[in-house]
Image (tube, rainbow, N blue to C red; front, side, top):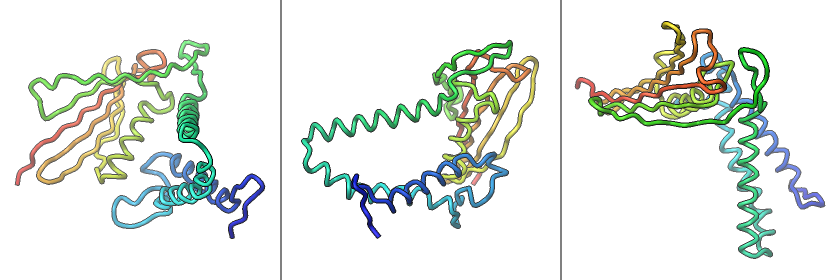
Length: 227
């Protein structure tokens, strides 16, 4: 079945692509990793879940769509094709940025509303006497519901889901006037113990330390294990 509409679109491909994007949104917003429904999580290594179908399905839809798009590009000049690609790239980036920024405003702890500032500034510290460690201080937009959530989700996808690191620390505590939210991952591989620690610091009442921005620290360390 390969019915084309008057606009030269494939209805089955549009339906398949829409279902794939819908499922992609669902698996990317499946809640807390430890409590998420198992079919909505990637298999760590051995095994297979419905979530593992999302990316191959997306690539299949892209490749299928190219068979229609390339015919249109054949009649266009190289400059027009490049301009179209750059325009599409800019629009996709802009939409992603606006979605991440949404809802554009935040509620101040002392009352009132303010425009959310999109600030992300990493600072790599001098390792000094610990060359086996890498310290990075990060100022980033605050997630008022969960400290450091966007970065934690990204680290968890990379470390735990894709590379098999194990989560060995996930806690929140208050020391003095500072609240620390820490999540750590660990991996033993090829005679080395690798650890990745991400800590977000907030005021004791849970409010961000810098208005609409959080301050966090990432520490990556490698230690040789006993053979």
